[in-house]
Amino acid sequence: MSFLYTFHRDLRSNNEFYVAPTYNYLIENGFSVETMLIGDHGVAVHGLGTPKDLGDFLCHEQSIQVAVNFKTKLGLLPKK
Image 1 (cartoon, rainbow, N blue to C red):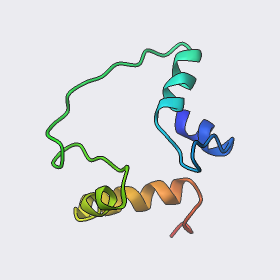
Image 2: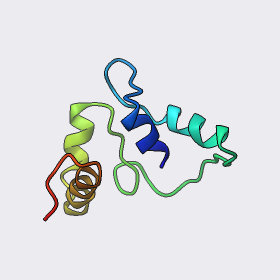
Image 3: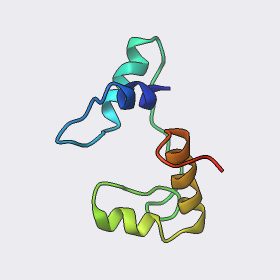
Image 4: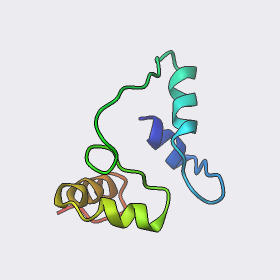
């Protein structure tokens, strides 16, 4: 929900979407934002800030499906 809020309002910085504005939306709407360790970088956690980061992420089959599902949900790919 919070990403869709920023996406549909085109809230970009340097022509990119960032995670932090979605935290602001959540906090403003009464949600709590916390951090939690979920795994090692490159295994369970992937940075997506550079083309290399994205390439490393997309080397995992599961990651490709996540990306396709996300683009489909945003209406950036046709639904099957």
